[in-house]
Image (tube, rainbow, N blue to C red; front, side, top):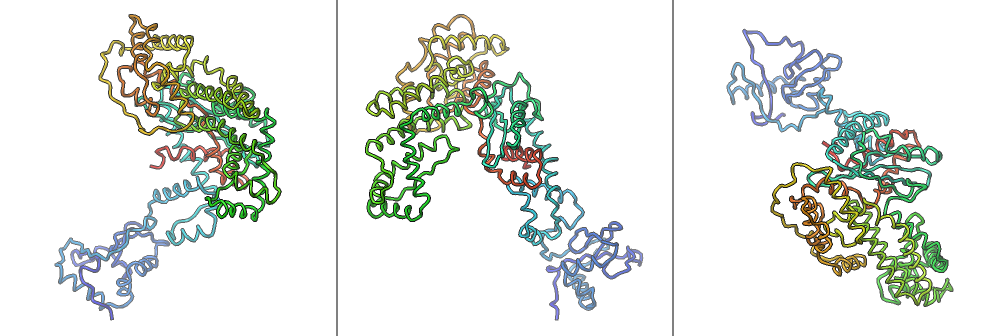
Length: 631
């Protein structure tokens, strides 16, 4: 027995009669609940949705009633009394106006977008699924688990072939990304480019070209202009790709906008890399290769690490020694990784941390012995390498500019000179530190004569002239005067505006070795540069501006130099120069992270994805998180 449905529980639309005849000639009772909007589309009067009539029949309309409106379907199937009962109840509860529609809430779910003929919604679904493949292999959409999930969530959605979604990514989405990058590029008056090449174990490679610039509101913009998936089977093609990296850009980069190009070790062959990180890594590598005693010591450490890595029983016993016999928290040994520049030193540092446990184990099982003086050398080696690891970490940060190269090289030079003096009792370590200093002087001799490094350091209010000789001061002054003379505008002679106070972004000191050396250099020198600046002072407005800037005290190293420039509007005539020279990063943006996150794309390349499509997808992936393409 069906429960009587009230006017608040059902939704039924009824059309009135006009002149004693029905408004539509209905051949089937189902038309009591539908309105024909076209030859192939009917509108449900119960849920107010369009419904496609496949084959122009009414079977699909009955099926809709059966699945979405069971009471009305039962009434249509023969329970006329039930239908009349609902009609009369509605008529009693709310008098029918000749042109009114009675609507009662059935608490229906939200309409199914794929139930209509809205093609744009289906395309949006296709695009979102294609974007999901930035982080998944194309094989993912062909898996039975994913297909079953989509069938449950949206039975009407049809999963297309992998080539369909590849075309979406490499067509519409790639075009939108290029338009976005073009807009980003137009915001910048000066840019710095950096190249990077990364090679995998199976012969795959990734060549990238990134762009860094500072907009007029002193915000730093970083994005990838090109990614190219490579195969090292053809080395000549790789060489051509490196050579034509900038020339083959899809977006034209004006030469007058390009401040500098920074190349890593792989893309700078056969010359030295412009990347400071790679130059410093080369210093360490050459110094280690020239020290045979230190190499023998690292080989001993590697034998110990490999022994515990290959034997679970040995590793468990070492853990037992640490926890039970020495009552210490267990540590782990760092394996040697030939790809990492400092893997040897990280491995040796992990061995020295477990010195007592390893010594006890070696005595019990006659493993290779490390003698007391060798333990001292391992410890001293870690202390010598600490500033190098800290410096490379700083330079590898994308926000670090070339302004930090001269100061950090000076700090490393002072650290090594101190090590040579302090560790003279250890022939191995003293020789290693001396070779590092020699390589550092040779690999970074250019920074004191390259105007890009000198200007960037000078225009950073944290450093200014603190690391310059008199000759370097004159080089910088002449360059600034020449640039300002060519770029004089109506802002010259403008009354100085009030300076906005800029507070330090961090009240805590970073207690690293390289920081303490830098602070010592900066604090032992003059707190301001008034004495040096007097040689630049004259009646010229440009020279007076430089005199004023030189006279200001240096800001704290934890402060943001760009925010300082933005706040000090009285130096606005220097803004164009500042944005150009501080746009250059200290190191090229490495492709390593993107390469490792894109292993699925290289797998797809082996199963049919062409290199050109993979390169386009890599570009979208690298910029997707920083773009407006999501909208």
